[in-house]
Length: 119
Image 1: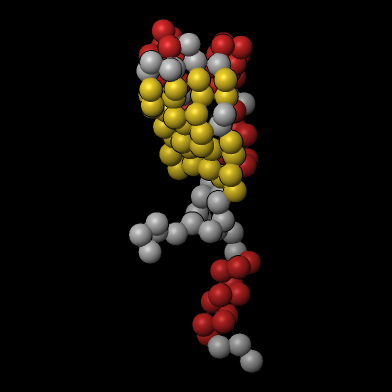
Image 2: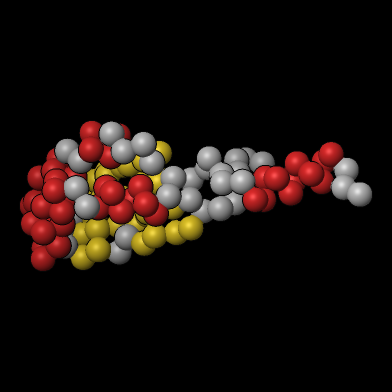
C-alpha cells in the first residue's frame, strides 16, 4: 500500500507541471554596426510574448557590441506557447529581416527538472 507521501509523488509525476518546459538560450551575432537596431526590434516583441499566457520570460541583451553578440534567453511553459509566439506576424517579420544577416547559435532545451540553483 502506498503511503500518502508516495501518493503525492505519484500524482506529481502524472499531472502537468506549471513549471517551464522549454528554455531558449544562446547567442546571435549580427553586424556590429546594426546591433542596437536589432536589439530594439527584438525587444519590440516583448509585449507580444507577454500577451501569450505560456510565456514565462523573454530577454535579448547586448553581450558585446564590438562583435555584434546578443544573448537570447526565453522561457516558455510549453512547445505550443512557443509555436504561437513564433507564428505571430511580428516575430515572423523579425526573422525574415534578420536571418540573412545573422549567425544564430540559439538552442532549445527541455527543462523538466527545474530547481533553485543555490540548493
